[in-house]
Amino acid sequence: MNAAIEETKRRREIQNQYNIKHDIIPKTIKKDIRDLIVATKSIKETNKDLFEQKDPESMSKSELEKSIKTLEKRMKKFAVELRFEDAAQTRDTIITLKQIYNSI
Image (cartoon, rainbow, N blue to C red):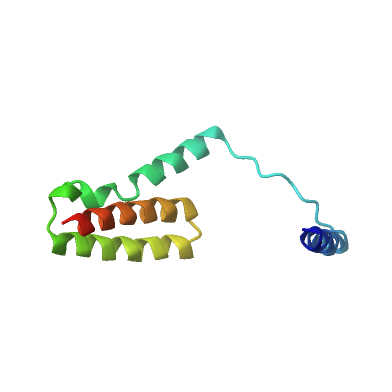
């Protein structure tokens, strides 16, 4: 634990020296509540389009496989775009679909 604390102190000192050298003043990120609401809505809508036509529980095995593969590609894309909340939501959907797939 002490090693981790010391490493954090070391990195913080390096960052502070860099900031001083380059006249950087760290600022807290401030977001409007509206931005947070939009982000939350986006997460909920992320995978809705795949299931508007059919309920996952009524899908065949091949349809589930196709949906899982599509979602895995989408999840990786979200991760590359640093949209981690969307990636996590997609991962959760994949887990649910795999459970349904395994129960068939």
